[in-house]
Length: 276
Ligand SMILES: C[S@@+](CC[C@H](N)C(=O)[O-])C[C@H]1O[C@@H](n2cnc3c(N)ncnc32)[C@H](O)[C@@H]1O
Image (cartoon, rainbow, N blue to C red):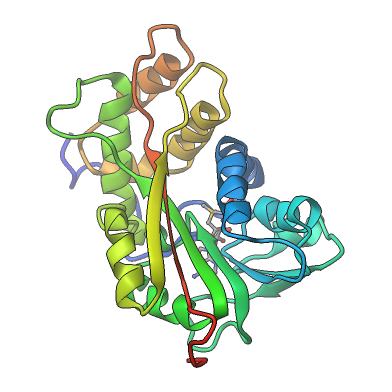
């Protein structure tokens, strides 16, 4: 199949338009499968960084708001401003201390204020403005606060054993890059980028959830492939049969593949730093 003959995936689109439309049935559940796979890891890191009583927090691209609500319920932070370009899932589940703002984070001055915690998970990788956004998000960190960024890392390489999963995940990254500008290749640069944005005590970690049949991460990939199928087919790297085979593979005992992981990087603004 050539890319030209299969090319019915729109190009030059944005997250939430050609793919991952919030109004498409099941999109909230897809985000929640990702949250189930990663929320405990995220919360452990945010709490280790000090998130707790008295903290005013910003959750950028908050999705269904699972992290925002756990910051309030479990960590006991004072407030969370949850920002998203589409807030329908946040509005469905209000909580005391949760403020919701519908805004495009790429717009200048989209978010007012300064925060002890600025958190963005699985958002920047989808936004072509990512370089400028890291600087803009760093500017929203109050003295003594921390910026925490999490995004996907692709663990396939030219030495990775070929499985039904690897063929399809490669097509997914390439297809999403061509349609909405998703790019995970620069995610390992986060520590340097945070340092370059003037933050200190920079560090990072990676978590790779096990691809077990029926697990949240397996279900997340199946839902994600369903929504990005046109973009994947348009790459010419896979056809519909290959996507179907990968879906069956994830749900079988034959599955022996390494999921894409989540890299979390953080950096702080010194308590005595002048407010930017
Ligand atoms: C993959 S979801 C991640 C949701 C949540 N952060 C999580 O990890 O569970 C990406 C979210 O970012 C939001 N988003 C994408 N582009 C955005 C933009 N330009 N401004 C604000 N939010 C955006 C989407 O609407 C979606 O809710």
